[in-house]
Image (cartoon, rainbow, N blue to C red; front, side, top):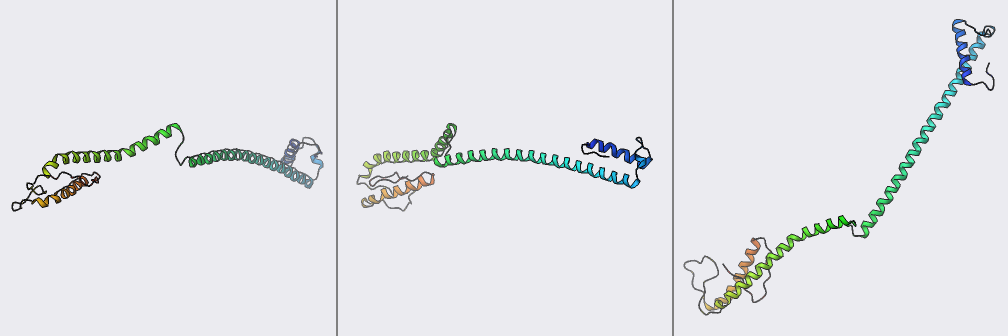
Length: 206
């Protein structure tokens, strides 16, 4: 019989003896043959229940240990994510304070190079416009003496009609305006910004 301090391995040995006696009638100790069959069956059932309860407690203990390990891993991961979130929030605030531009040295150089590349087309267009204005001014200084002559000049269009009459001296005042309009139209067709000429300047008329 099981005593108060008896271990579970002793219960397992006793269970084997009881089962062997029930199945084959073998009684190594000679004690089981003196017991009633009902008492033997009750003893077998009690031992099985105790061993099952022991296994259940062991499984529960193992399950709790696994849960504790999983909980520790999740807590460590949560702390790492919290630190990462705090770092990202600090970086986001820093970017907001700097107007959304990166602060690292290499990033600043990239931003400056991007600005330079974006400003190149505008600088090229301005340079071409300035060259066109200077060319028109130089050509104007060459044509001014001929405009002051009283002799009639041919009309501004490049291909005059055969029946066109010679321009009168009074019509010379309108010739510079037509030439300026023609020069502005050609600049727009060439894809250049049209220069705003100051009063008193005249563009060449081809």
